[in-house]
Image (cartoon, rainbow, N blue to C red; front, side):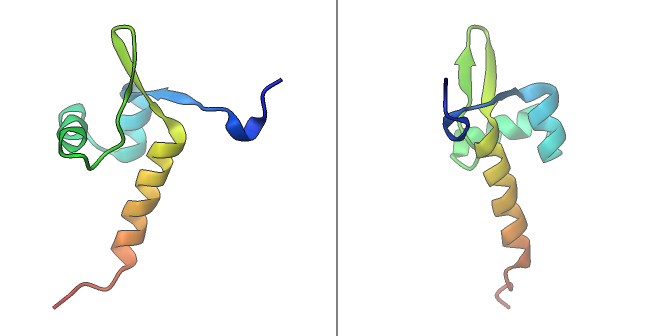
Amino acid sequence: MQNPATQVRLIPLKPDVQDRTCLGKSRIYELIASGAFPQPCRLGRRIAFVESEIDQWILQRMAERTLPRAV
């Protein structure tokens, strides 16, 4: 039996990642290309993302909004 801490959950781009991030498919692909978004996993003709990486990306965006901005 696998340890729950080591289980990886994959989520599809549509609708899960798009709904969680409020980003469109094109913008997500732009961010991937620039290295600013987690890399997807290819599953045949489809792609999926590691759920914990998407969650971490969202938490990082939330942390950035609370940082003081330089004037």
